[in-house]
Length: 536
Image (cartoon, rainbow, N blue to C red; front, side, top):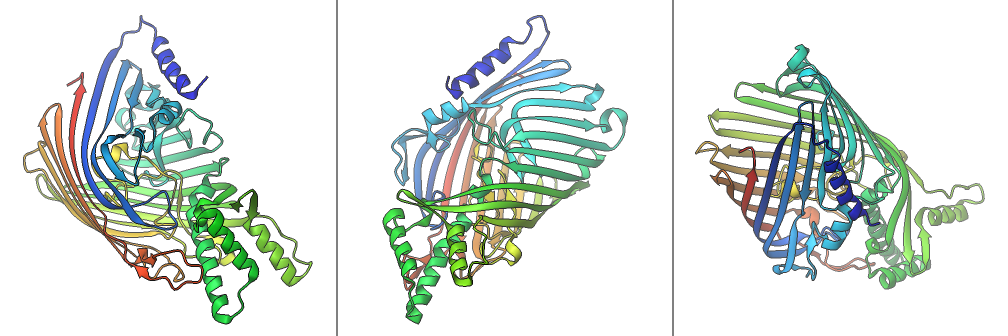
């Protein structure tokens, strides 16, 4: 039986399992989000090695959400269906060209088979008066590490104690266990993510606390995360070695043979032939706080990431698999003699960190000045770190909405597909200060936002980057609540690419190709949302 069929059967069975005799209050909701988009010079995320800004898109797309929630006094049931972002080639033209209808970038048939279009399917129970003890289980939106470690709709269970409302004790704690992949497939089901939080509550919506998370990688997640970093090292490392050999007149014939094979088998791009297998364990521990001082709001998060991964980069060259570290170990053995015995994949120790501070000041009712500072530690060279230690902050599926192009903010942020991530571009980290202003000149009817941010890498290697400057980004958003069931929105974004993205125009194993400036991405997005809620 197909996994998508199982998803629909599970939803139907859950509904039928509710005893008719139980009195319930049912709430129904539905929304249709229509989008008209014009974008140019967007980053081709399918090839993180080359970092080319050559994607374009214009036309219409949409996404639809519908759900039902049943309240059975001390427990509730939630089912939400989500189409994902639907793009039809006849209505939305893009470069590179897409010839089939897609949902969240996947063929609709594949998305249906993998997800059943089920976003949420869970129960939530109040096990103590006043919500002092709650339990949720099923498929729901899980957030770990204030979204910097994980945020997605997935399968899991969560228990939370909140003693402020009923017992007047300023304490909250939670335990959660989820699988890393929320599809109805085998993917990610061998990779559990466990997390815990404990917090002292100053008041409603105000607290300070600690967090802890543990991730066991049974599905090569870490290998997929660091693959662009490994690819960058290997590709530019080979280029550098060949260039040095040419200048010294001592070009290694084996290196030339490998470069030729890469050209023939991989089209000159290692990324298309590379996979990184691994085993690994990751841990995170951190602190967080949010406090309201009349018109001033302060939020902060700091997290330490540590663990280890046993990485095995493999190049598939035709029918042959080339294990990079085994080749390096064998070469080292030849150079140093039989005393060198290690041929195992490389052990990498991970020690990294992040910090985020957000401040907001409402200087006049409905008008606020906002500022943030985000730091995600990075690394400069996969192979030449001291003691095989990686310093790039590793997340499983983070959800960062600080800006709309470099990050995942904007009017589509609730529908944004999450992605495996190391910090920044190819694990080089992020240093991002930003400022903005929000205004509600007509109460809740009109919402205006203007934001600007600078974006830098934390660490780079001069072999393949000449600057830490990713660039700067400017975002504008307007949201007009025309009626209780209709919203009209406008979004305009511009990203000025920095010198970090300057790169050789063509792949040249001997160097010498001209360095080009990448074009600047921009986007204009018009949204019309129609929504219905039976409670309103």
